[in-house]
Amino acid sequence: MLYKRRVQFYETDSQGIVHHSNYPRYFEESRGELLRSLGMPYSYLRTLGYEVVLVELYCQFKKPCFYDEVLDIYVNLSELNKYFFSFSYQVMVESESRVFGKTKHALLKDGKMISIGGQIKDVLERAARSRP
Image (tube, rainbow, N blue to C red; front, side):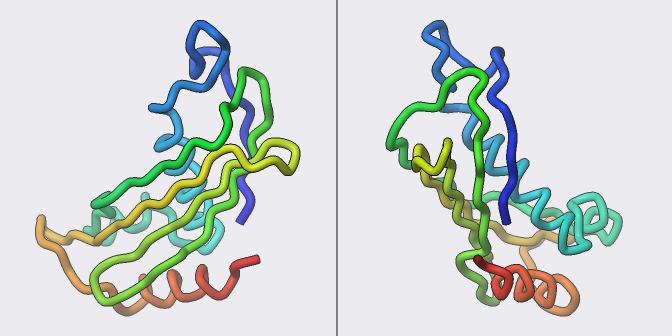
């Protein structure tokens, strides 16, 4: 899925370069939109008593992003097993790769990690099939 956003001034350092701490936020925004597009936004998961927790985060900076650039963030489900699911992210500016990232997640219910099944597994499998 493609998620577009423009870099805001407050996200940059004094040289106008996106501060590294913003990329996990960009990943979260794009991941949230992917789940929303599949009919399962975080708000819905929370009403069912689930929490999606981050267990790993990886970010590779190839080239900086700058104030006012439009970022094309491609997000895809890259892994799904009984307990974990992972997403990959490619941040592009005008077809130039700038940043690559990965996140790994688990589901909690009542504070305990649970296996991924039922409707949630179905939605995640649909996300995996919808890769470009």
